[in-house]
Image: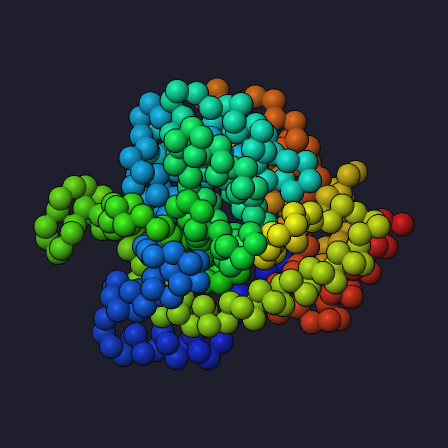
Length: 357
């Protein structure tokens, strides 16, 4: 079976972890600091605050912006549940708007139409590693004096005309094992605003500015030095990982373009293909099962939009968002990860085409 994902861990990461274990400094320390510095450089920002997960990054970013009860945050329903959950966790209300039918990213026109006096932030998702339309979204945010919190959990090194995602507003990234780079588990908040970074650090570590001096409350969202060491090694490899993902995606698009709807990338945008997601217009689930029988692993991201999840339906978030709902019935992610051999790519393309004929 050709796997849908394959974490790339080698001797460099193993050696880095062994050094941390030998040092006895396992909690947040110098390796995390180095990882933060390197990731800030990668994104072209001045500050990066490492945390324990991508969900923690979203949660901390919202808290750092002072978003809470009575506030609204406009976001997409077509994402992992953490995008909406973290808004609820700070006491705010997620306002779900529909997505673009081509990129499947949040639709800026729908965002502007949803703004009310209670709106405090926009939270776009750079879905599958494909940057959202930040030109239009930033213009809307600036016009209405809204915070911009980028859910870039799938979009390490994605860019628009060379500017990395996570640098337009406050960025949030995940380092879950299947992501384009990993720390085993972990996340990070990126920003050019020193005050936001300071707040994020307080929320990350029980409101401590220095050890045992608590100027506020917070959480234990710290990253370990083991994770930081893995992250430093992974940053060294990220450009190579990305180059391979781009090449794999280009091959698949060239082969599959006349048979299925392949990913759409806007001019000037760099899609880093955390997922290579096609649209299967009829009997998607049967199509997925047939590919599995032919040795091709796939995944559905996402089979149910957030506003259609039971928890959200029970609390009145269910409304008609037809583009997102149709996408949920059609999307299918194919393997695109750097570990694929040319023979794997040929098999994936051949079997998809065979099922389309």
